[in-house]
Image (tube, rainbow, N blue to C red; front, side):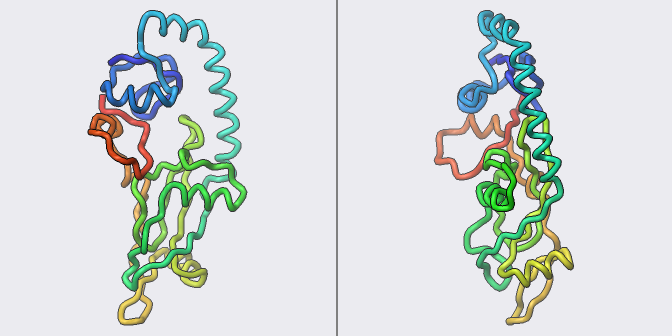
Length: 206
């Protein structure tokens, strides 16, 4: 299916680009999210008539996002969670948790801005990408620990604190979860309907 993009979509194109995408990706993601229109003759004509308005609105949103992103970039947030002795969380840390941690520290971040498609399930320090606008991406550090004391130790050493036989030991630093969790969104949206439990990335398989 061909669509005309109404905003930049990562790994797909820029505003105004006419691109080929899988039908499921268009129907289930691009179209309902108002990120694109079907590339019909009438829709392309409509886009051209509104192009200057769309570009101006996008520039305004990008400027606002850049202002917020400059304050957010490189920030570190502590999330306290229960975990086993070997560092496995009783549950997981997801995009909403990261957004809430940022919001609690005064940052205007929504869950949809957090590029985290799979929950984090272990203690440790993780780099997570935040994308408040399709053209603006920054990184924050998430420190998941059992207590403030262990969080301080993890910040100091850069390693997760786990326990063996009741004794605290250190594990390696967590990976960049944003990179690790990238999925093929187009393939995902082509799959049979399932209950969504995680964020999806804004990419397609051309």
